[in-house]
Image (cartoon, rainbow, N blue to C red; front, side):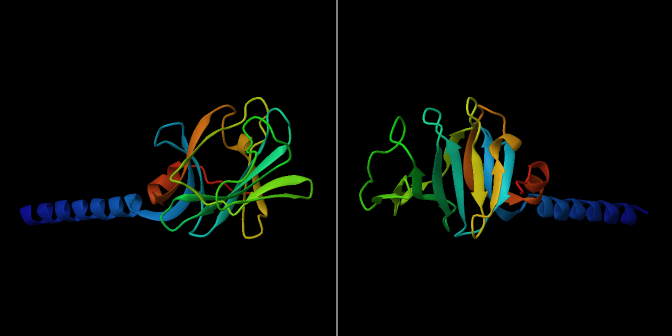
Amino acid sequence: MRFLSNKRFIISILLLVVLSIILLVPLRTALVFYKENTNQIAAYLPVEEGDNFQIIFTHSIHLTDVVEMYEVLPDHSIRQAEIIYEHYGIGMPANAGAGETFVYEDGKYHIKDMNRIFPSIVLRNGKTVPKHRLVWGAQQEHMVWFRDYFEPGAIYTIKIDQLSLWDLLRGVKIHE
């Protein structure tokens, strides 16, 4: 009788270990939006190495779109590749940096060939002019409004992270 009790105990422990591994081992790479300076996942978008995404916001003074283009790097850092905007002004670059190209095309300023690498990006969701958007896909065909996922005026830290099944279950998946 004692043998069966020990056997059940061992099986229970093994099941608990297996379940913990299934739930807690990182299995999916994602663009993760963390609430302010916490580990609390507000939302995530599954991504892979080499994927591109854009963050588009409306400049609060000029009320025109600013497009920031990013790439997911193999080490899970984020490379800013290009920025597009219509007007110079507060917060907008006046020229390209070393190795970058500054051009005027189709009525917009472009800074191309950027190689600015970030481990994370801190972003404040628009409060006064809440028109932030996230765009992704091979042809940039998917787009969501930040206001549908994030509180206006709130601050988020954006990172490329490996998420476990547990993380995926408790976070909000960004989808079109």
